[in-house]
Image 1 (cartoon, one colour):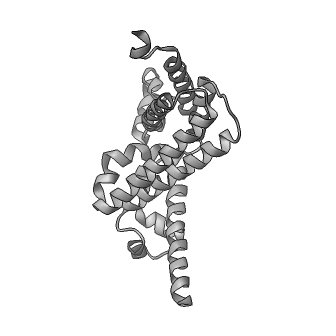
Image 2 (cartoon, rainbow, N blue to C red):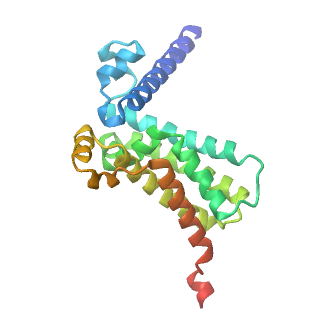
Length: 221
């Protein structure tokens, strides 16, 4: 029994080592699109074929990393809000944008998850991702609801927009080498390479403020 427990613990440690290696490489290279299983296993100190014992594919590894990202975002929002209360729309948006920007690999993965990661794993793995991601989202919304003066509906809308903007802006602000070279040749096109954190923060604050100032259809009637 003790040997089995040790085996389970060893497997969990190695699986975590693979996740950490994938995240480190993605940060170093500028995105998960450049990460290979060979590089991940080498960084984690495992044989190239050993990854299959922990993750069925690179897509499953990345989906696990995205799932962990939702948990990290939830924890970051809880830490950032603490026992604060009565946050205004701009302050609430600042919490959302700041915590998201602190998780660059997660922002990157927010694009890849709906494009292919969810669809390239088996249904039970996809179900587990959805279950845990939605649970983390709901905790984030509940935490902000306690800390903010915004309504629960406004917060859910803010989070929806934040996820979409973070996913899109991250990709645009981290162009491929080909696009980066093109922007050097044609600087007028370089405006597309947005400055991720300031742009995300500004637009989320603008959106949150607009949400609270625009009457709902019921109010307008």
